[in-house]
Length: 386
Image (tube, rainbow, N blue to C red; front, side, top):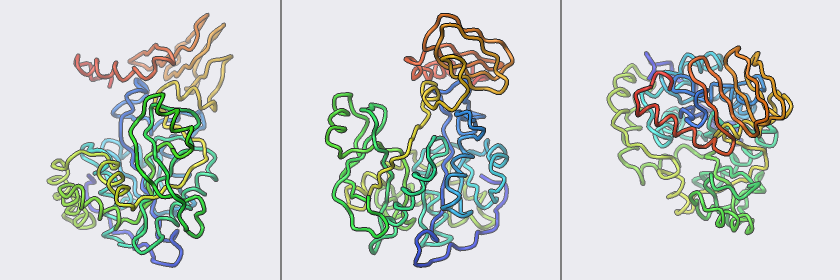
């Protein structure tokens, strides 16, 4: 956690416009083991420019949300990443940075953000958007978030709203959201009730989902009144709720560091989907707004090849400032963090990641298996490259 408490933020105003109550929360965690050796514990994927756009993933996330949040942010990340995050988002105030002493999964990260915001203003509406996703165009994304904010503010208690991605193919790598009846929300014509969240399906089941037109990909985006988020967290994870409440009560006081250091390590690990979203959906408190924007969670190096904004050398996608690549009758992706010349001749769908202390060679078909190398290196004690 931070060394000393920052001053409390000004209270979010309560007005007729729900956008005035909106605070953007950016959880920036996870190592991204499928993107090793580029992504590591000390420099996870959200700190990298993986699209060739000139902007890192976390910076792009911040910029995308700025027109809606208007300076109201919380970034939740690990203590080890404080300096890098502050360099990439220098606008961030100390009070806007929530540092985890150790990873505790999204339930604790997003739950603590909700608890802190609730202490500052019980009427706040939070929107949680992961730091490591690629989205375009921003305008379509912002329109969907605006509908989600209006839906979150509707009714006497509001709604927990997820933004579901319109599926482009029967993916087996994502969870799905089954949407139900349309909701009558002013300014949010596409809002629907959520019937259920479902886990990653088989190929056959995913094809059935697409055929019905009722299912969206679950991208882990949530917009909700903080009071409703905490209500469901208390009902379903009372131990986690109690610990987060204790930390939040001390957050803007001199006791913050002592309380956080004592309580945070004791918190249970659980994803926000299981802690809040799924039980809230069963209780009828969750809505969904479809997102027609392009979305990618950059889960492996094959995903980087799909993004297409990086430099192309023949049929090879090249990432890395000053990368020196020669190709002949080759295809795939090269990520270079060195000045070493890389020559590809007569090889298809290759993935090469060259860093000063580690070299990865695989194919786009096997890109998901890179995490196995990380596990093997960790087991063998070669943690200096992780």
